[in-house]
Image (tube, rainbow, N blue to C red):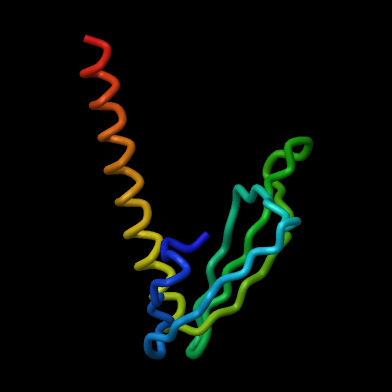
Length: 102
């Protein structure tokens, strides 16, 4: 999910461009609880997978994403900013619930 609205311009590492994101209505959402990261001289590989519940200590990689180093930095920045914003909103909601509960 992007932190940007459709009308905002996300920074895509190699300059800013306007992009409209289209999400298929039948897009699958999947849960992944393990990941590996490999960094080469020109790209970053992120693998996502799941641990086996029946076989502790084993996991299966289900997705592999390859991106440029620049886009990987953009991903880090976007994740950090989005997580910080979510934490602030959650804190504000908790504070509002405490005030309304008194």
